Image (cartoon, rainbow, N blue to C red; front, side, top):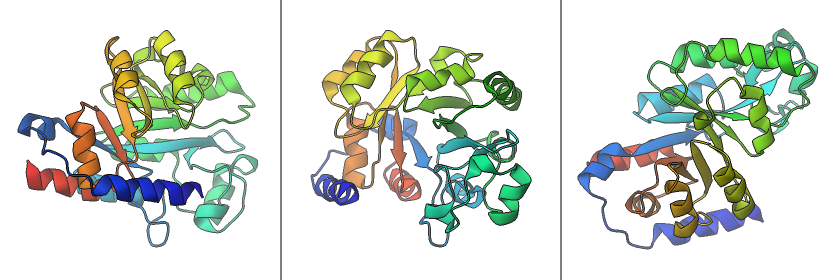
Length: 259
């Protein structure tokens, strides 16, 4: 039912005419490919191939989800298991990285992703809720992996629960971005109280009133998941900083056409 409702909203937003944004706005647009350019048939989400397609087509940034293997290797995977995407219900946190890769070779490590994409692609790294069996050691692992990058300039840290930012408390809070699902008012309040760099949520729930509150204290705004030209132009015309999409390449092509 949720996916049907989202598709209905996307279809509705796609047919409402929007004014073409100013050239400067189009030039400054930053699109983020949500889990890479994927269809989960030929190209799977959160894989190096999905991210490479986005980068090759000029997309500014990519969103990546982080989970941990049993031997404390952070890997790029949205779900706690491989069932939905790869057809194998293996649980990521119960296997070593070597064991995981033997069964599902397309799941990359965070280190591999950073090595390949951090030079010219902005990384939106989402921390997933995990048991964190060795929290301090895991913090040090993240610190080491991110040490070659510049916070804010090269990457931001995302979370659906602000408590997860404890895992990266070695980073400036300005690179944190809480992301709301349906609880946007609650998350907005918590984000306003923290010295975070941004706030994200669904474009329909991110009202201008909420957006302006965050902008008034210098926080960037991200919305998702934009799927059409008119929806993209709506977000740009109201000053959204980062546009997340499951169709980032299509949106990038639209941008190039109108720039």
